[in-house]
Length: 101
Image (cartoon, rainbow, N blue to C red):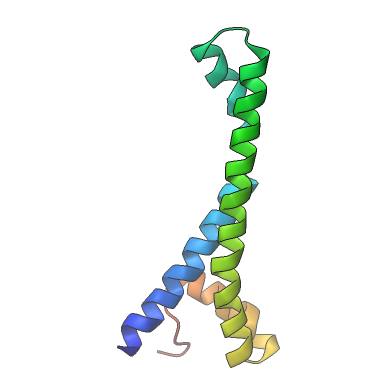
């Protein structure tokens, strides 16, 4: 059960970070080309599509911060502050929660 729990913690941290990265990518730039393929020259459709993409990305970012934040909080609580960054980096790279094994 401990291995499964640590796997899920690593998975949550990785998922949260991936969602945060998706939040930073400028997907809204794709709104104009997509809207022009649907209805060429429709400025209102471009604005609506851009707004929808921005809202969706913001929700993705909030969910990512919530997921990753819970895992980071747990890591900070269970390790020294100096080791926290190294622990988070190690989990992201290796996917293993336990440090020395």
